[in-house]
Every structure is written in C-alpha cells, then in structure tokens.
Length: 320
Image (cartoon, rainbow, N blue to C red; front, side, top):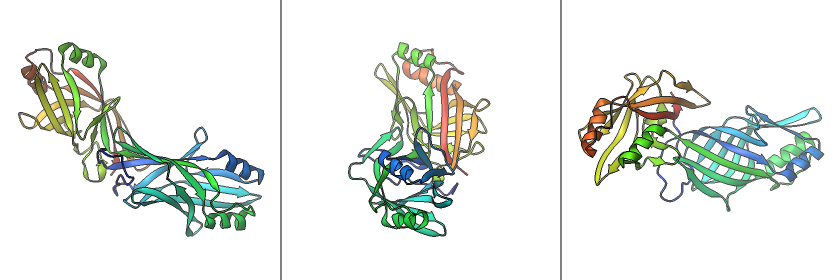
C-alpha cells in the first residue's frame, strides 16, 4: 500500500504530538507454555514473509487507519504433512486500543486472535508510538481450524504470547556534530527543538508532505523548528523544507523570511525502500553563509562560518 498514507492510529499518551505514520512493525513473542504445548503436539510454527530475531517475530506494517493496522507476513502451523497458514494480519482497534487480530486463512478472513490490552502501556520514543505488550489469545475460530486441519486441540482463549506495536513517524532526525556542539557550548548558545519537533539523542522534525510520502527528487516539508538562545537573545527558525535537488534546507519561518539554513549533501547518503518506507540515511548538513550571518548578528560573535558542519540528517517517510 505504498503511497496510500498511514495514520498514527493508536491512542498516544497525553501531550504527545500528532504525526503521520510511515510504517512500523508488530512484534510477536510466543509464550513459553504455548511453544512447549505446540512442540509436544508435533506442531511446527514458521514465520511467513518475515524472520524471527531472538525469538521475536516482526510483522511489517503496511497501512493503518483509525480502526485498523494492516501487516504483511504471517504464521504457518504444520504437523504431519498438513498445514494451516494465517497471514495478512490486521489489528482491529476500538477507541484507539487493539482488541483483536483478523487474518487470512486460505480464502477466508477470520478472527485469529483476541487481544487483552487492559495492562498495556502506550509510550513514545521521539515521534514514534509504541503500544505493548498486549496479551495475544487464540480465538475460538482459530482453535477450531487448528483442530480440524492439524488434529490438535487448543481451547479458545488460550494464551499464545505477547505483541508490541510500534508505529514509526514520517520525520527527519538530525544528529548534531560533536565538534559544533562543543563550539555552541563554549559560546553559551543552546539549541532546542520548537514543538512539534522533539529531542532525545537526535532532534526530530515531523514530515508534513501529503501522506508522509518522500522522495529525493521533490521537496520534503516539516513542522517544528529550532530555537537558538544565549545571553538573553534568541533566534528561532522553523517550518523547514529540504530541497534535495538544490541541496538546501530552507527555514520558511525566520526573522528575515525564507532563510537558506543548511546545505544538504546527499553524495554519501544511502536511499533504501524497506517495505512501504523510503529512508534517506546520512545526509550531511553544513551551515550556509546567510545562516552564519544571522547567528553572528544575533549573538554578537564571528564564530559561525559558512560550511560549518552541523551534523547528519536521516529522513523516514513513505515511498511514493
């Protein structure tokens, strides 16, 4: 469903900023009791279209709305030459909370699992939303299908494991150059994000392109900004536009209007398209002459120069 657009469908914590989702994953961990029971019954569980990592099976998110989250991949249960495959998992949401997982079983769509989210926590990491762990229980329909197809009796409501949902936001994350961070500290100039941008190990700016779709051949727009402050003075720039073709990041909002803030060097960057996502990694940012002049004038210094390494930018969005 590339280019179709996703939404952050899960209920976010109070105070969290809204952003456009750009993929993600739901991670399933099989309960040890269920794994032992299936093994004892001669049932082998194999991921389909995905691979388990340290006992966790990730299912890539392909789309979402306010009522559901769709995935690729599935699970194949096999025993004695017979098998049952459950695929194309869809988490059904009610008031932002996950309540069940529907799946494709052959040509039919069934409720494969029910979800118990009563003790589930919703947290944020930067602009991303994480919900889990959610208890995953076998539905009566799926239990019946397993018994009919594989000859193994498991009761409806049997606890199969835990699931955690992570929805990634369309965003640009900037990692500040260590040398430049030191210079700013020496000058007494602090840099902070302006909402809805947020900071943890990086400063993250929500992408505002329609549906979160990005490309290295078209402008990438953002909300939020940066606030430079020190000695009682402040310079705020925001609403950034990356022009990948021109190699410039513009601040559409600044004291002087549209300001070419950073040069953007994509020559060493990598562009990948994992699943529905488009990811640009390692774009180098450098201060422009115009931005250096604005910073020097604001803080009464001469330390800011054109070409000063700002850091690197990584952009995550949906592939067009």
